[in-house]
Amino acid sequence: MKIIIVKDQQQGGKKALEVFQAALNQGAEVFGLATGSTPETTYTEIVKSDLDFSQKISLNLDEYVGLKADNPQSYRAYMQQHLFNFKQFKRSYLPQGDAADSQAEIQRYNDLLAQYQVDLQLLGIGKNGHIGFNEPGSSFTEQTRKVKLTPSTVAANARFFASKEDVPQYAYSMGIGSIMRAKSILLEAFGVTKADAVAAMVEGPVTPDCPASILQQHPDVTVILDQAAASKLSR
Ligand code: F6R
Image 1 (cartoon, rainbow, N blue to C red):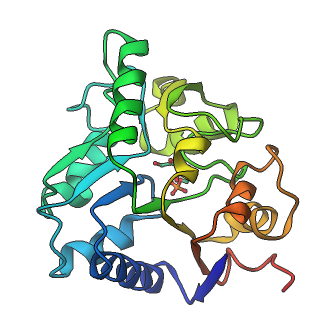
Image 2: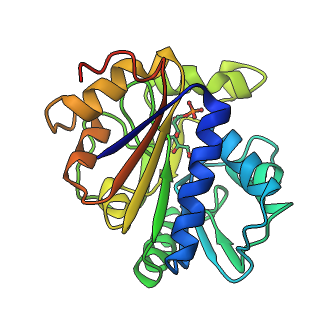
């Protein structure tokens, strides 16, 4: 793992832009994207930049089950608001939250992932070490599936909803097996609330108790941290 420590999330976004630029320079065609507060500055920097994704493919990690694409809380709406309205990709895929047939939707997404190997996968990390919505205990080999969110993740996501009761309990998520197939991975973490998860990911044992710890076994991972998120690393 290559660890880069920056002053704050703003600087993190600028560093992440460099990683996207380098991937484009090396011919990357397929980008795996994430939502949440972590990548916001990265998307701001990409939007301000002259990087061209108009011939590229994007595939998002996850989407809430039950939300229509035009629901403002959906991850599709998040991506429109933060990136796609300003930088268009040739094609952008997310799981369809309101798909009538869950199994068919999971199959569709796994077929897409088989068709398009991700060149650069952007990730955040949950306070409990989740990546995508692969909560502690998830298998390291699974592909896209429907997952039940843990109470801690529902509570963390509640800030985006009018009330805790409105937070969906299930999501479609790429599995850890899908994430590990990416050729390169960029994980960002900012703030002291991520410090324990970051220490477990980087320095702890590789265990499903901290899903992100599997990234120690990926050959090309860059981690961008602010000083607070790096504060519990011993080295
Ligand atoms: C988002 C995702 C999640 C988030 C994680 C951190 O697509 O898959 O794993 O990256 O929950 O969320 P934030 O960035 O809001 O702290």
